[in-house]
Length: 637
Image (cartoon, rainbow, N blue to C red; front, side, top):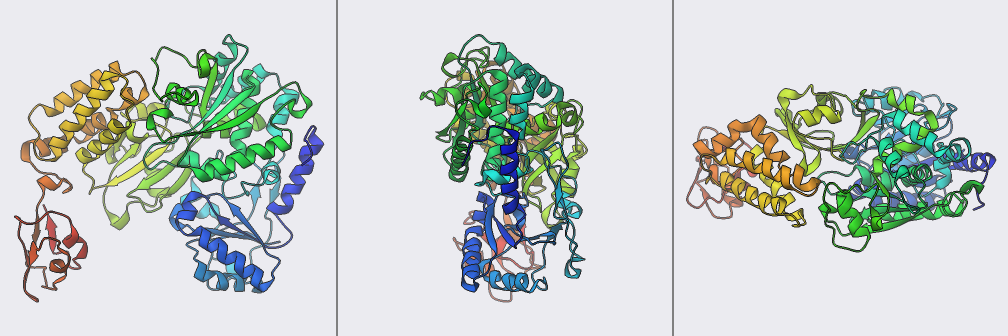
């Protein structure tokens, strides 16, 4: 690779990238992020490769990241000259020969696409360059455009703009989408203070959970005393059910790198670190390759773009400790120490990594930076909510039909995410709550489904934005058991350095376990509330000070469930084993004999074609009978 030193070099690389982004021959892309691989994408890719080679076809086969609709993975896209891009969901290796047949014939007859993309626009460049302008064949007239698919209709893809579009291992394709033009603009046309001013004007807030104004943080770090400064990227995504940062690092690593380069230039840093959890091997591999490619092009290293600016990035792998998502614990880990937090009053922008000024932002925050520099802070501020500008990426999981990664404008009502994008609750069950902000977040009840999703509104409701996990619950979810689960997780992930967190969270877990086991006592709810206040006030870091959130929010909105567990010794959701029992409705039971066959203790018994019974003394409440019954005869109460 030749070094990029002027705008002509970037344009040349962009033209090279366009050749593979929109080739003159058919290209097939397979979503090979972790979500796709887990669904069988590797087998599909292998089958496609073998079929193309066997038939000696000139079809180009490429890997790409996730388009977000994980519920229909493996996802395969076909891009042909003068035709729209077609997306095929739930692809299998067995379907590959038939798909290739149809591509060769030029007619899609049996394996219908789930959506098509008629035209796409470069997001990053000042010019609006569009491609995919081909006319739809008649066979595709009934296939919806991507903007008409409910899952995508209300999304606005900024941070995830390139995921599922480019080959993450190809720097030229990133440049063809406008990549690295922003660093050129910053280094050649803007002073560091002007860059910071634009970030401040954008209203960009940290997407890692704290929600601090990014530009103000950069300004503080720039003004901090010290010749050596660092910029850091937090890719230690530990929330259960969260995978926003992983998808970005896997599908578009260059956007993170470019954002860090711009941030380093603005702050005056010459060295950067990306802290990634070791459980993300694909993210680590794609980042490492992207860093090497950027170095080869002269976009990292000495005298970037022939300027006096020097900057390079290293990757550091974490050991999976949840507490290392906290800034000071992360920096301690980078230094080779135990991942323990420091006191809250120590500001890392002044005394961070190796006691030097350090700026830490998460993956999604960095990925937004090149867009802001390309289009201006005012443009970004015009998207979303006035106090929460831009978009937010969420991993939408739990009891929802369309599980996947979504990016929506700030301020969108909660119900739009759950019902319009998420497709509602499976089996038509009742929507009960949404848990946001990870294990340290809170539960928003269905009665607040119109709540705007912003930093401030979530905070007022007793939850928080967090890094972007969003877990949907139906009426089968026990809120007391849910609080117990998250407190148990936080107890195991606490570093144990401070007493309020170490002992307080441990004791909260014991109380919640007693309540779920039917041993709850009068006054336990008040005790949990009082302990929460003490833990919040006395903990050293964000893990401890936010740990009581799942308990406080469930008490606030679902206090009746706590009272039913304690006073009535009943679990309204029929989840807590100690408080439920199984019985058979004799009017519905046909005596089919299925439940005795699956019952591990022989508690379910009866003669064929006669109503069965369950012996409560030997029943272990495993639920095997409930799952096996085809007649809704098993009742849990």
